Image (cartoon, rainbow, N blue to C red; front, side, top):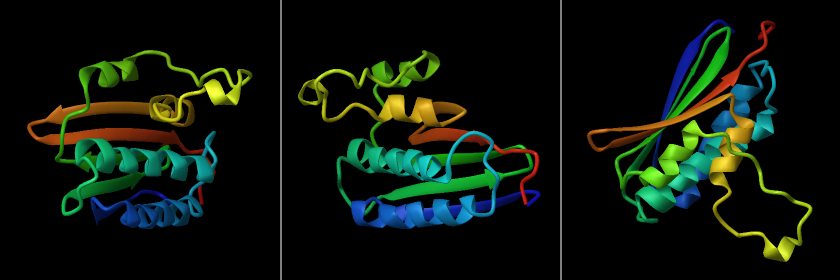
Length: 150
């Protein structure tokens, strides 16, 4: 597969997120990921879309979440766009820092229930970035492809 683009738009309804996951699974069947597993790519994209719906749109349906996939021989680049509330600067600034998954050897009851998204994205993706231009939030996820992609 040399290169291509796929654009999806869903309503900001959590029930629609499964369709994005299905699209990721289908696309990853045709790409040879260098480091990430297809299920990890799906997890990262679904997490990002969930965050758009939960945080930017405050769980209100009737808004648009766009997911754009672009791939070439070197990488799969995914942009998740919404037009809701901006990401807080304190969270967005973490994209420039090294972030790791929390220590899982501690008592599971002591671990936080939420707030794992940033660590998850940074540990799965080869590159993650966020920007807001005018009223559009864009979260960009990038995954390297091996040189033998079909």
